[in-house]
Image (cartoon, rainbow, N blue to C red; front, top):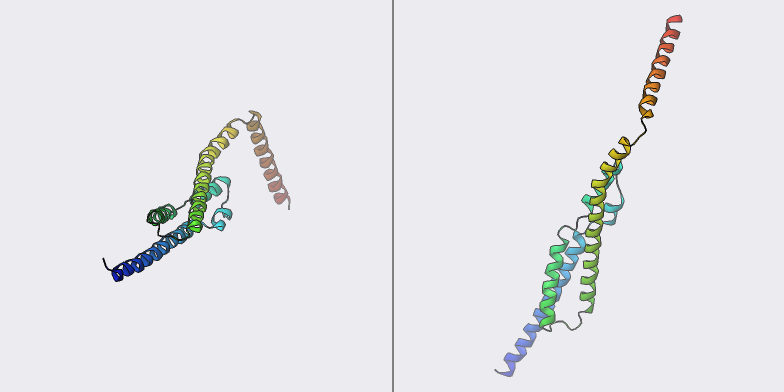
Length: 159
């Protein structure tokens, strides 16, 4: 192999290394972009707790972020094994941060999912656990409302 060919190989390897780093960075950026926004998990327009939980559960979806992270890790691992990166600490740190964010989102989604199934059952339990006199109270309220309606009707007749 001549010296000129070896020089070309080094240049090609350098280009490949740069492209590999760009691929890792692009995959990381796409992964970050695929995560839900902070506003998506913070803001709600639901009317009740179950609506809030369902909305939050939908928002806590890492989406395609996991696939993009996998691509980034694949190219990063290949680049490391080929010793293609001069300094890959920043990429390794960002991959770790992204993994942690996805794990946090997944954990939160599981917790919200548990609450989503627990809250309706808890509501039913609390409704069933009310004292028997609640029924008497309801009847008394209905009688009082009925009497008030009759009084209003009597007043209108007198006029």
